[in-house]
Image (tube, rainbow, N blue to C red; front, side):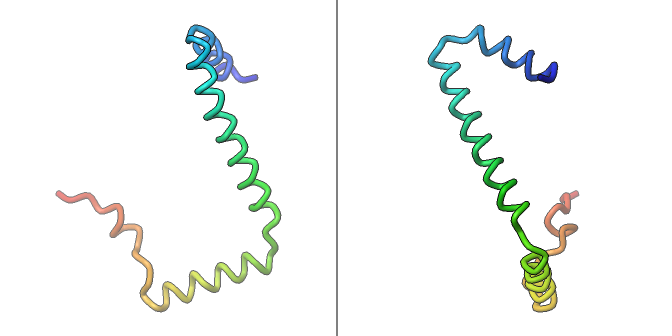
Length: 76
């Protein structure tokens, strides 16, 4: 266990049980979600990656995307 996680758990132990359970429930949902994404990502085939890349190239070609420098532009 990492030092940071140990520190968080130490702080959690100071909370009332209902707050501990609420936080633990959120963590469990986050862990489940992360596991699902990992499984989906790892099971993606090269053919699927190629299809997604082709779709993105087509969207760029059709002007259906916004350049990131336009999205993150800071107004002066």
